[in-house]
Image 1 (tube, rainbow, N blue to C red):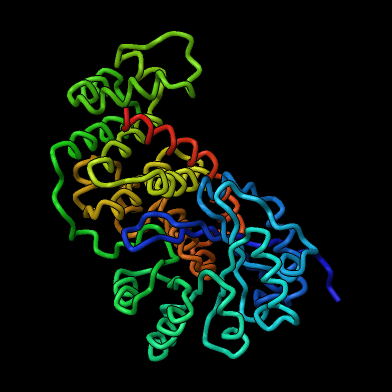
Image 2 (image 1 turned 120 degrees about the horizontal axis):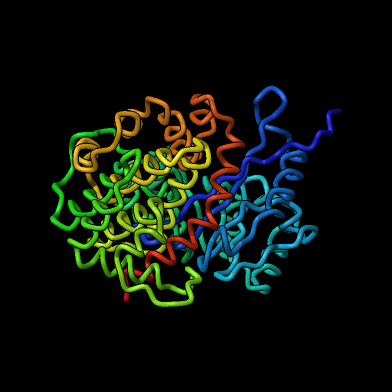
Length: 400
């Protein structure tokens, strides 16, 4: 028997309310078998426990609850349940719901302040037997359409809330709302297939994209960047606030936009421009966190600042309901960046396609890009802490 320890490919997805505000972050893992198929439960759990042990709950979930797909070790106490600032939720997969003495274990976990989630809910007798003990129940919006209304109603009868999984499209999310689903799990931003349809830009957004255009040049002209910022009072305020924040480590106050441009550099300025752009609509740290995580992952996988721009603009286009075509035109980005944004082609297309597929928890689609799913997942999780720090800083610069 092959006892080689497999590496779990860990996925992190937001769980959001209907208004897309973040409720929690869910982490689960998959372990490919030797031939690429699913691994045995024993090897899977060994890899999952090892993978979970490497996670820093704060940098993965911030102040939001962290939801972990339970292993038998977590359920019976053989593996310590991690502690997170926002609390921990354990999700019981279908096979653990039938675990011997599961009810007693759930009562114990509740007494420890651990929230409970019933995953893969299909209405089996074993699952229904523990419904009174759980806080949340997951149903798959992409499957069993005929039985979904009854499942959702049954869960609500027991006072639990329903999470609709695989809310990957606007149509599935709309269907979930019609059924009375309370929360959704899926990518923060749905993949936009239409590169033409979208709303028009406001004056403030156009100014932000003018700044992106200046910064996207192969050799950005500092004076043109300064002029683009100085022409917009909000951008000016954000630059000065960010460069003078405690995170910058400066010993004296900076009161010149020109100095701020030099000290922040193109990447931070581009991120600031995007933060200012999305500030025209309700945006939380969670939203900006997701945008920057995508951008930083694309940067890590491509090794290029252009990859960062691709990730950043793709997420902003989806979050702001902006057409890719108009975004490309207004921002004046290169043909390579434009190709990636339009149809995931060109030198950065595969990277963007892989990151989008990872956010959708679609390992086959990641592999189809030619990138290794584990490499993409590892790059994404490594980007999350830096993205949180940047999102927090950028969000603060817009509130002062």
